[in-house]
Picture 1 (cartoon, helix red, strand yellow):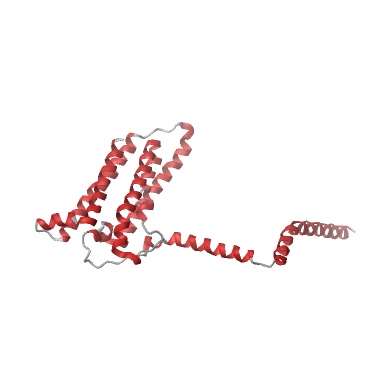
Picture 2 (tube, helix red, strand yellow):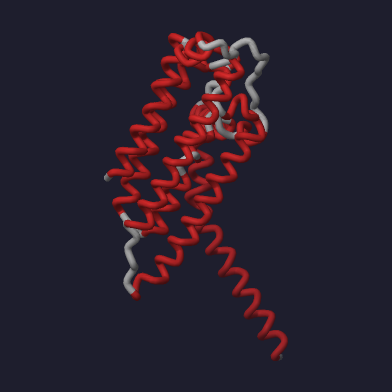
Length: 253
């Protein structure tokens, strides 16, 4: 679709600009040749970035409106669930953007370290970054999927998925190499959630390995216990029932 092509083109332009700035400093050099400072170059980049991203989202939601498919009467309950889910995803995306900006500020949010390397900056792992290394790659496209759910259109969902894949690829090819160059060993290899999952998997693996190292006799006892437990519980129920019947008979006498 036209929107899909436009979205890819404008985002590709941004990523190419960042890549050239990373490798050749083309953006800041263009400003310096005209007598402007690095801060002026960064301010100019923020305006261009805001304009392109805003126009990208605007055209996407226009696409949602144009391709909106009216659901059948029988599918209305399901569509109501889709609308609720879509609104929730849009709200999640807004929360992600606000939380990211609260942690990074304008400097980090607009890729300031591509333009002003002399500005003291450190990696922040609080707020939303406690859980995710790159929230935008994970949750930054949630609103697109929300729009797809509300529009009830597979075509819109395909555009959202395509954009998500494209953004993740661009992040891997442009942002990740720059971060590695700037911060090196200070980079955290995994996000908080991933680290916690890996920790639990490792703990479970250690427990399993310890169980395998138990003496054979002990494992056999555990096996016998697990096999005989249902039988013991059945005997217990029968004894309890028998005693209950005896108690009722004695009361009747």
